[in-house]
Length: 231
Length: 231
DNA sequence: GTGGTTTTATGCAAAATGTCATATTCCAAT
DNA sequence: ATTGGAATATGACATTTTGCATAAAACCAC
Image (tube, rainbow over the protein chains, first blue to last red):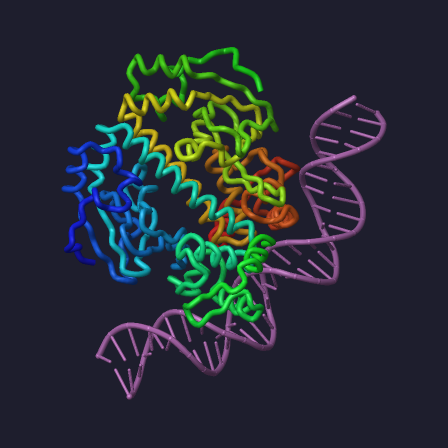
């Protein structure tokens, strides 16, 4: 992890309107000063489950996984997050320790603001408070809805769902490089590594996708959707 | 559904300190006036997925289930909620429609405050805003953590987990009357009705629980915990 | 009370999923 | 370039879970 050298002002940040649009000039400055921007390499752990919560963090660039390690040492991945996501917004107001770990899946830039500063802004600017609530509500809902989608499907449907999700909501195209291993994909949809691999091989044999290692090409989106729908 | 006749003042409500403790006298009055208390019978639907969000609701008495109906008409239960829980806090700030349905499992009293009023309080009282955030954060976390617990277990572990949960967090004793059918229990832990019933029969045969219809008695808590731990 | 519907219950065959073993490929550190 | 460890791949087999059938018991509306 290292500090970013080219300091970007919040005003020119493309994610500014997600959160800071209603701040006054003065409040803006406050965030700008309290803010640090960090860069993490692929594979670097950014947040460790159980560590202290004292910063409010969001992605400016990159991709991360949020996960939990259970008592048997196995990871369960909660979600894959992209820029604009607030990676610890759920723990921040009710817990003193991080509830989930976060690791970078590629080079990732993170903005980090002292929690104290955010709380001051919430107190001084109620529109900002409502916006933070809006984002919290949205994030929680997204995670819960996604768990629902996964839980109601069986293996093939789950893999299909995730491939579709990656294509439509992360990469916005039918061809992409998998940001995670097959094991991690399994951890994301609650199934074994072997079954994950087998299912993807099957999709390839059936002509639904084409793949070469981590490179995925969804050849027949309609059929993928169909598998996704019937579970 | 009917309006409650014996109007209870918020000040004497036992759940007052969950949310309203930092309100001024004036703000208190505002809530009190904007508030309606409703009584729902067992089986009555209180919130319909897709309906408009315009009230902030919380339980004063009773038990409810929050659930979603999927495209095949099957329900998935998200959580069982008891007094003090805010049954639509997750949808309220990011969505204009309810994301989940809520139905009473027994006679249930609900306090309902116009969303507009709550938003005004958030604007006028920043400590209240922080408290609302704290509750949102807490609720989201609880739901997500519970999903994790369920997803990492298989059938026996899931049933054991839920029985333990009911005993320890809903009824506070080893003997209780199941508030839901076996089908609903299945909907809660993502398994079929048949397997749910079979697993409970097995627990009975093994001497872990005793049961007669909906009456459950956890005879051997240690063994239940063991089943719960090994998945 | 009566009749109809839902819930609980259990058996059995089929399907899905997990486990273990083994081989090959890929990737990163030296 | 070499090498060790992780990731991908696949088969065989065990176990788990589902799906369907059927029946008794419990519950509800009239």
